[in-house]
Amino acid sequence: MNTEAFWSLIETAKESSAGNIDKQIELMIAALVDLSVEEIQQFDRILWSMMARVYRADIWEVVILAACLCSDDNFHEFQGWLIAQGRANFEKVLENPENLADIVDQEHRFDIFDGRVTSLGSEAYELKTGQEIPESGYREDVTLGRELLKTEEEMRQKFPYIVAKLGECDGDEIYRLLSR
Image 1 (cartoon, rainbow, N blue to C red):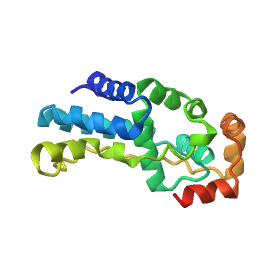
Image 2 (cartoon, rainbow, N blue to C red):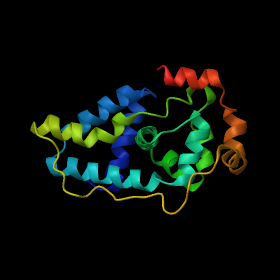
Image 3 (cartoon, rainbow, N blue to C red):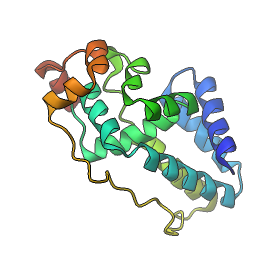
């Protein structure tokens, strides 16, 4: 499996699922199980490599503004969700994190956390072999660098487009998110 095949698998499942991420995940796992064990491992390697590309302070800040909050676990889930949105959307957000506002609307701002995508390779490998995917040390070692996340006010000033498009977060929205 190479990067082109990786994105093709994601795009095909996305198109066939008509925007239903649960269905998309089912389709991706089914497609992966049909591949060789080596290809599943290669998919997993590429997935973690793509997640490492997203692991940036500026993207994390935009996610905080978009979804009203973002813990470490939430950001991990967001990384998988963004990959599931396909290559064009993935690259669009990497190019300019505020482009997230063009991918998600206010009504679906909390749907950007879906961690199941990050375990596609592991799940497919286990279904195919009955064993856990080997820990071969290939997962990317990433850090946010020396950047610290900005304060909420600094983030709003730095990313006005996402705030204008999705609006400010209020207590009711945060309560709805936390009570899901």
